[in-house]
Each structure stands twice: as C-alpha cells, then as structure tokens.
Length: 144
Figure 1: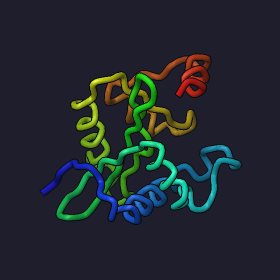
Figure 2: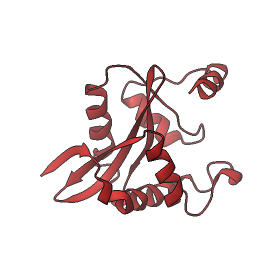
Figure 3: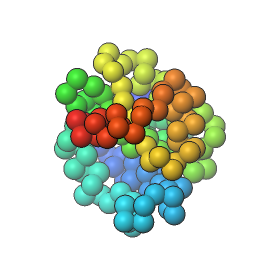
C-alpha cells in the first residue's frame, strides 16, 4: 500500500541513495563546477537536516520510492531536494509527494531548480507553479 509520510532517521541512507541516483539526470546539464560525486554527500544531507529541512517520503510496499524536503525559512516554506528513484519516475510519485505537501501548506511555498532542467520546470508548472523573472529569481535566492 502506498503512503506519503515523514522520513525516519533510520532512512538516511535510503534518502541519499534516491537523491544521488536521481541526480544523475543533472550530469552534463548543470554547470560543471556544481556537479560533484556524489551529488549529495552524507555530510551535506546532515547539514540540511540540521538547517531544518524535513523530508517526506513516498513509500509503496515498504520501499521508499521518492523524497521531498521542506524547509521553513522566514515567511515561506521551501521545497528542497525533490527526487524520485529512477525506476519509479513517471509513475506519479513526485506528484503525490508535492500534492501532499501543498495540501498541508499554510504559508507561501517556493521551489527552485536549475534553469536547464526542463523536465523539472515542466513538472512544477504542471502542478501550478510559475517561473519568475530572472531578476526576481536572483532576489529570492538572496532572500532565502
């Protein structure tokens, strides 16, 4: 049975596995100086958790298939690190996670992605998000 739920502390390795496997899509797409191996090292995940990112997971038959983090910052919630295991992509996992998070949102929700990640932009647009102008994006990045 499928469920969207908070990720547990003992799922740290599973979160890293999903993020790093799914992030392969960015190889050769994002600026070379921003790509590294692994894409998200364990220390970076630990820092994100310490900074208040709370991960939600989509589980089916006991297997974590996708993750999406939410970080409250000032007056908004930021969607952070949204990834679906490659074998589960295109099956609605990311959409279920995002819809769950949006249904419980009480503040403005912002999401950022790489400008060259056309698939990610299509995904977020399909769920009601709209891109902002480059100048506004730069200001949001500075603010949050």
